[in-house]
Image (cartoon, rainbow, N blue to C red; front, side, top):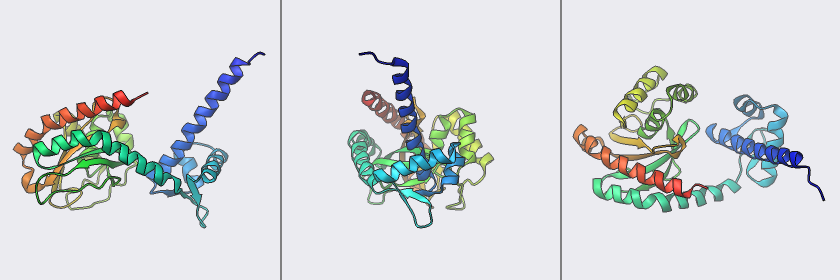
Length: 260
């Protein structure tokens, strides 16, 4: 019995490509708010309409997407179980280092990852104060108004960060929200130079945060300490930075050990 090795390799590559494209479709839909049209997906992913239609048809059959009466496509219910399982696992491995950090600083410590043009909070540990910040697991916030977003952008090559910022929805949440590309890129460069990113009432009035990106792969995310602005003065933030860096290194090691 003989095997056509080149043909087998080609089939394997096509299968990997299809899987990658299917995930790209799901991520693009998530970045669009969970619902999108075939034409929009085709344009944003630079894939032919028939390819997008074929991928969506498969995702619908599997329950990972659904077609709306409007003919647009939305994320499907089977993703809920995957998301819940992922959240539990993220909290399980990131929770202990975040708990240690929160106990030491007294403020809420969180872990967030980049998801399209947003950051998603994957784990958190509450501080000891009666008044504290709560970043619900699964919450999505803009890269332009969060310390986590700016920290992750600062870890990218400037050209890559600029391309991502150009596609972001830079809506204003407070009168301190950065809403222009130039101003955000200036702040990202400042974050890159000092080694940490700040959020000073830009997403919510009276709330401040400081964040550092995990070293290595930018997809690994960022560690954040957040609290009322009255407790997050300059001296306090500078005291928090070395602790954040140590926690970020610890989480990066955990991720590296978990990688295949």
